[in-house]
Length: 169
Image 1: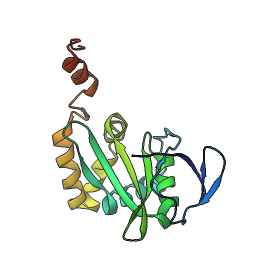
Image 2: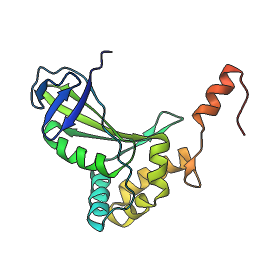
Image 3: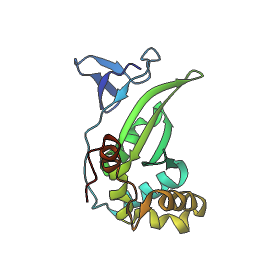
Image 4: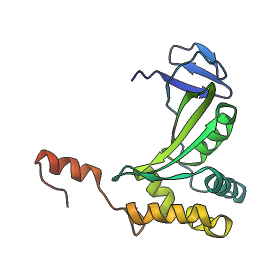
């Protein structure tokens, strides 16, 4: 799979060579967007409400058996929304644009330890009265991947055990 490194600034996408590409250009192909991570857990009430609506309507909660993740897919015209969410949450990554039947879309993904920080903040507990269905999906992910709002599986520990280097703690 071929990845190119890009930075998103407003509605233009700039590759690392400084060449501007319009986000609606269908000849882009597949690439990986690397965003700056902004850690800001002091959300205003407006930000918290926006995030709750975002996760209630769009969130896909799950994982790969070891690492939990939340995935949100949105059309290319919604890139400013994904960038705004990116500025509010630590460690999320935006991938894309991907093409499906002529439509461009992006994927926003928050996973692993970065997701654990947000889970520990208690944000998702506010989902229950807003969207019981989304909260149920979140709770299933929390049951499968977290213990006391900490990651259940330590990926580093498992990798070392497979290599025969012993376990940490």
